[in-house]
Image (cartoon, rainbow, N blue to C red; front, side, top):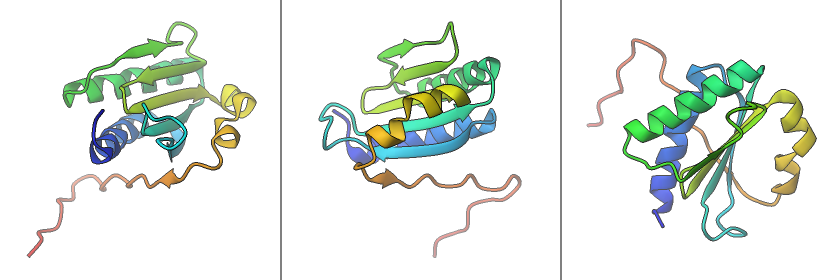
Length: 130
C-alpha cells in the first residue's frame, strides 16, 4: 500500500489532468477508514460521453506517465461512468446524469474531503522559498 502522501500526489495529478479536459465538480474523499485498501476516491463530471472518455484517457495517461500502474479500468466503452483503479486512488469519471443517479457523495458523506489544489495560472512560475 502506498503512503497517504503518495495518494494525495496521485490525486492531484489526476485532478489536473481531468480539469485540462473540461472535468467539472471535482471532489476528493478520503475513504481509507471504511476501505482499508483504498485511500482516495476522486469524483469528476463530464458533460457528454465523448468528454467522459477524454477525461478518463487523460487521467490515465498522466498517472501512467508519472510512474503509477493502473490496476483496473471499467466503463470506458460506454463512457457514462468510467472507473480507473490505481490502487490507493480510484478515479470515478461520471456523465452528469450518472453522477446524480448514483450519488456517491451521499454514500460516502461521512468521509473527509481531501483538498484539491487549483492549478497555477499559465505562464507563472512557482515562487522561490527563501
